[in-house]
Image 1 (tube, rainbow, N blue to C red):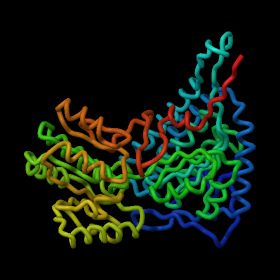
Image 2 (cartoon, rainbow, N blue to C red):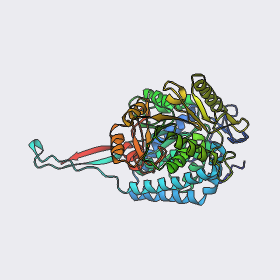
Image 3 (tube, rainbow, N blue to C red):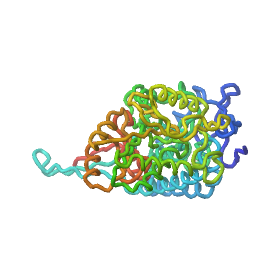
Image 4 (cartoon, rainbow, N blue to C red):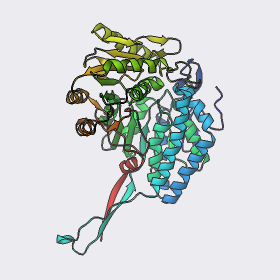
Length: 480
């Protein structure tokens, strides 16, 4: 694949320079559908990581003094540049992430919106007037001002290589922070293309850096006191491990889940079946809020199953470059094997396979859209995050009982409820232990400005532009 040298080079991007001298410590980036090598990138060594940290500190010292209107204008220039080059970014995302092209187009549109939101939020970062006209405060006034926290270490996942990176980069730039991004080793090229774009749009040196490094070098950044915040999106086990090593840094974690959806007898079953099918299998289920657990009222269970089967039969499976494809490759062969192992384990323990259950295309790492029932909570396919095109469906008798079942999970990111009963909506909202409840929609619903995050093992803190900016700034009070 032509790397389009006008938008990126296959090296780390530090201080507005392309950096990387190793000829032996190399990352090979592959096309996730045919496994051909797209590019090779030198891994950054210790000296290059230190170069990134020191220049991020220098970049922060410069950029934190920019006025709000300057930050606003830069973000809009980056947005406009992204839209002008969107076809190149779409091609990168489809190639290195294996994302279906329709979904990749949507990621570009959302990313442009994130930059737009960030630009707008840069103009309205504000503090609080603090009441103190009582006691020893009589005659005094006080207010707070939000101050950028400092250099931010951002670690982003493969599944949204642009948008989830921008959910860290854009609010940091709006707030006046510098950023070092460590992208997923599966999808570094999109991040490097963004870095090149930012440079061409006039972002000062050192403000945004992309470091392609192994975990050992990433830990140097994590533990360095000059880095003031970690923003991580990825698996729960990795995220909590990083938090334990982060020391005194502020930490925001956007982690995984095994999202549940409930369908009660008052729901529009056809609409629910189509939406849940998409929510479970789009992008081969490689979304942290993909539908994984489906609970259906016993009264309409069989009816729902039939509508679900029809919806699945209409899914297009194959190359992510083909229009209309919903289920494409998994990001790596290891996950194809893992899913087969989990399904086989569930089968052995009594689970019934309603749909799929096996590899669909070994050569292209595609697992068949799969639906299981008669599962048990201790099965990995139920209790852990599948991150693949697999869902389980169970019949439920009582609404309060299914809420308790959902809450027994160690995860709590988002949930969906299909119902036309106000009482069910209210009860679920009050009792479900999740970061968000989506009514008559799938857990995978997200508007990029909303507060997004989970509870329990699903995360710490919130993303969404205004909320991320609050995480990336600190209140400083003046009393006079």
